[in-house]
Image (tube, rainbow, N blue to C red; front, top):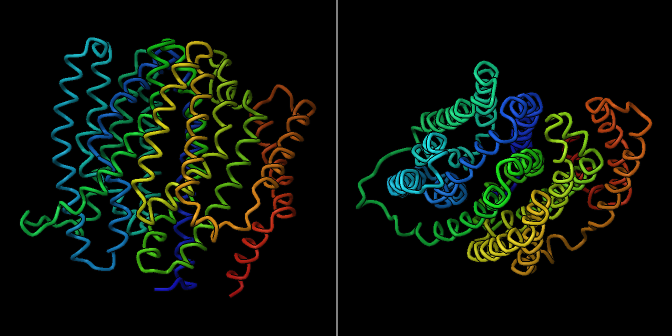
Length: 487
């Protein structure tokens, strides 16, 4: 089915709701995280994040890459109800089996590993997210492009969590309550997701199913998921073990800023993945390339803007979101956001290309190599540079990712991104960021919140026209959007 104007409108609507969801997730931490960071302090915040990071490894085994694979697999058959129901059932059976094994392993680790005794309550609370992982069906909603529901559900539950945090979390002793609130939101999310896709959930006898057909792709996605999870949390765990909870708290504080920016940067790509998968599966390669080129350009433009702006205003961002105790985190923020332009390429090539065209084994291979590089870099850099070293290790591993993604997808890049010019966009971001950095010394000094708000507007006024002036791709993208609106 060829992409029509109606399909493009639906895609635009989905993107709007997903961006709204991400923006909501960005605004709330700006309001809540300063309160949490001050209430818990670096040490308790480090304990919470350490327990979350440890359980994330078990959650990785419980989900086995199903959240990513399930969205792509279900998107391919979403117009065939019975095949969709069987696919959902097969993946849920696999998930339930993995759940049982993983919960038992987590319980053994919590009670037998001496290092975990001090974190026992936090680990067990986070373990509830593993328990409900098999019925967490956001991947099915994503395959069906129900981004309006996902956005509204996310915003409603986030507001509930904010209310509970302000009511119950007041001091470092409330670390358990803070963890319980976060876990409650995830459990409610899973139950709501299951309840609202009941018509697509039908339990078939095992003899009518073909679970084996999912093993190879799930294993590939699991391998990549292992590497992604290890890469995402190795810095936190190793920093805790090498440098202690204080430096871990500073780093996780900075990583939260980066994660908020990453969510916004990848919002457009998340929406397009099911459509990319369906277009490639139906042989509509022209539509596939057009969508990929559009989302790649959007992601890179946003990533460059975020990197330059938050490099110029890293200290102000730390002052707004934290307190004097987190002042040293400014250097870590600068080091972390340096990887944003690289990550924009990685998202487009890794998820947009390799995942959707069936090259999962290359994606998994890349992530495993990157994971080993990350561990080695952390071992070399953390003892000397603490949090900044962990951030630098992340940049090194992401750069390795980019080199390998390019190698495995370059045949597609030739026809898809042959006219892209990334350096002018990067130069525009640097120029706008430099002007704002110089200007902040003269406008609203000592008022970080108002400085960031005012200069964000100034930055966009400078950056957007520069991008349109020097980038042919950006001009073509805007012209296409304007023509679609006129039809």
